[in-house]
Every structure is written in C-alpha cells, then in structure tokens.
Image (cartoon, rainbow, N blue to C red; front, side, top):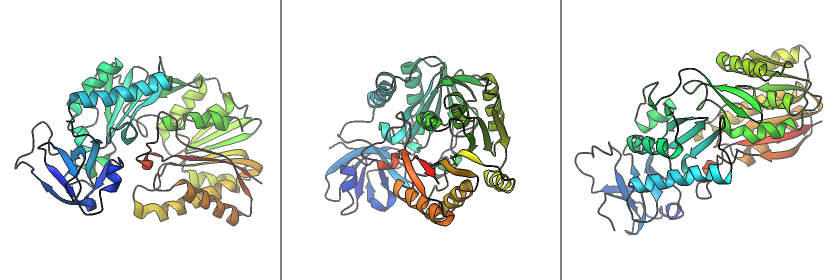
Length: 404
C-alpha cells in the first residue's frame, strides 16, 4: 500500500465505500494517521489520502477535508495516485460521453459537461454554453486543484474561456471562497445565445440561477409541450420561460403565462419570447404563491400548469418543511387547473425521493377531492447521469399528471 496519510474507518463502516460510494462522512471515521504537521502547498489543506477499513484493508484513494461534513471524497479504488493523468482521464471520459454518445455538441448548444459524482469527479460541475464553460466547485479538494483542472478543460474542449460560479452555502460548508467574476481565459461580459429545441435563449454566465440555465429540464420541456395543444399554460417558477415557450412553439398552446420572482429572469423570458416570435407568451415578476392566490380569486383557469420550484430541502432536517411546501404549492396549483387539465410538478430536492413525492401528490388528491393520475414520471436530462454507486445523483422528479 502507498505511504499516503491513512483515514481509518470505524468498525462495520467500510461496506458502502467498497461499493464505490464516494462520500465518507465524519461519523464513519475512526482516526487519521500520517498527516504532516504542515499541509502541502500544492494541496492546500485538502491532502490526498488512502482510506482503509478498521481491519487495515485498502478501500480507495480520496481527498481529505478535515473540517468538512464530507470528510473524504473518494475518486479511485485502486492504489494509484490522483495525479494529472488521472484527472485528465476523468475529464476526457465525461466529455466523450456528451460528444459521442449523447451528441450534445456544436455551435450555440449547451449541456452539462461534468456532473460531479456521476462522472467520478465529486465536487465539480461544468456546464458548456456555446464556446464557453461555467465551472462550479462544490468540494474543497478539487477547488485547490483548479490550477490543474481548468487548463485541462480549456485544452480538451477548445473553449474560449471559463467562468467560475459558486454556491455560497456549499462553499462555506467546505471552507473556501470564490471571488465574484473569476475567469480562466476570456469570457464575454454580456449575454450569449444558445439554441435548445429550435428556441433561442440568452444566457449570462455570471448571473441567474445555477450556472445560467436549467439544463436538467431539457428533455422534459419538450415532452411536456406534447400535452399543451389548445390549452392555456401557466408556467410557475418559469426562469427563462422554457416550459411556456416550448408549449407555444412545439405544443400548439393557445396562450402561456410565466411567473418568476426574479425580475432579471423575467426579462430574459420576455426577450426570448420576442426573438422567437411567440406573441402569445406573457411573463410576470411575482411570488408564485401570491400569483396563484390572485389567479384563483380572479377565476382564471388553465389547461396545463407547470410547477418547477427551486430546491426546498438542502438538509435532512428540512425535509418535513419541504414536503409541506410542496403540498401547499400543488394544492394551490389545482385551484387554477381546469377539470381534465394537466399538472406537471417537479422537485429538485434530492432528499425528497420519488416515493415521497408520489405519496405527497396522493395527499394533494385527497385534500382537493380531485383524482390524480400519473401519465409520465420523468427525471433529469441524460447529460446529468445517475451513478449506480451514488443514487443521490438522481435528484430531479418530474410528474406529468391528469387531474379530473
């Protein structure tokens, strides 16, 4: 075995990690042996370690965050180094999947190029928008190796530049900070255009939710459009208006109203409606719950209602509160849905699994007195693959429902 520092697991804690689950939480760690008195200048305070069972059997290599809730992120299960060749190989495999298998390449296209644990790169998310990348580091170890990873990405993708984005809550938990506006290479100051399903959208690489666009709903936006013919559509938490615009362009919807609390997002949606020539789209900046109350009071009804809210539960202790939020939202959505209408309801809270979400919709049916039938149960787009070794990578639920 290598002479790396060793993370010794507690008794009967090694099984998930032999099965290639990449997160070692602090509660599974008995002790750490062999750390130098001073951290490596190259690795910051997140050194490479060997994880071993309580009996001393080698499990995997990973990166240690002494103060993180995820104490070690695991990357390889053979006793070989996490060197430049290893990181390059993981990046090449992720890029090859999107280019060769999924065909997500070409001018003005967009996709998730690296999806953290699902691509064996825990703590790193990379999205591509046309000729530029957006990088989001969610793990201290890979952030400290960004000087290695970003030049590799630039070389492998021939991109013009990489914008660095950060989820501040995750960065605070991991113990690092990314200053706003950091770039590698050259990144445009203003918006760029991408095309998805023959619709043009403006993307700002340093602004907006997530990394600029909700790429995980790509296939769902087009699938939902097939239920829109002749219907009035309400798109709640609409962001750039993807569900509404697809319903009009590809589904033959009669009219679409998009609601989002973000005024900049609504401006992007309005511009997208204009540039795509979709005159029957209207977008309003408003709180979704307040808008639902107002629409119900006015007697306004829709044939298709889409609920795609942000994550309601970031921690396990917030799941009960999140379920109450989803219940309230979907119950209110039914109040503005016509009899025989279609409810499309989503959850991106990974801690709320598919069974929990389905049970919740059963409660909505009970409380409303309106039968709900599941027509389709969908997930995230395939450039957000699910790792069989880390089922937490399956986070997006999208239920298409018929409601009497």
